[in-house]
Length: 264
Image 1 (cartoon, rainbow, N blue to C red):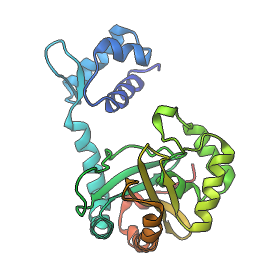
Image 2: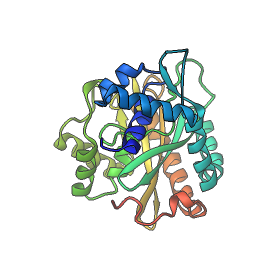
Image 3: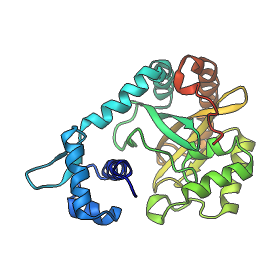
Image 4: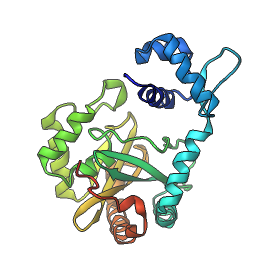
């Protein structure tokens, strides 16, 4: 990292992965930034309201100003208003977590969700705004299945397979294993994973297509005790119908109408 901007963005991204905060010494060490430079960056971010200290001389944490930027962007793009009724309908029918992600160049980012209320107990509820790991999420597989193998593998290679702590026991960790998942998803029409993203969790996902190109992904995720392979297969038609419905209406959102989407 050679510039103050690079360092500032790296600090924000790093703190986003540690919601309870980090001490400045650890931030500097993990980002390989001189302590004095890290202090200047944090001071500037604090002055602009993007970070704060939990207590005097304590850990640094992100403020809600970062969240407000993202929410404002999504709101102005129109995607929340467009997708919300559809996501809520699918959540009501499934009783599980429904997520929408959008394709942006070489990234797939979760931008909206709706949680079904039918079941009590264990609920699967990750944070929005994160990029999906393409190799081990149903959403990632649903996007990759729409791409030529060469392009799909290039995207995964750029992002990486991750480490064992970042995925479930059945996650593909080789190219051949990943291609097996993608071939099965193409034959099925949607991606299906069981203890791939995380232990005890399963999910299905379908691409949102417009003019033959994936512009986003809809997914259903939950504990495998409820979301069994048989249950996921039963939900498949409803998921595909919802994805097909969202494709045409997505033209009303600027987030789905950027040039060269998904072709980076």
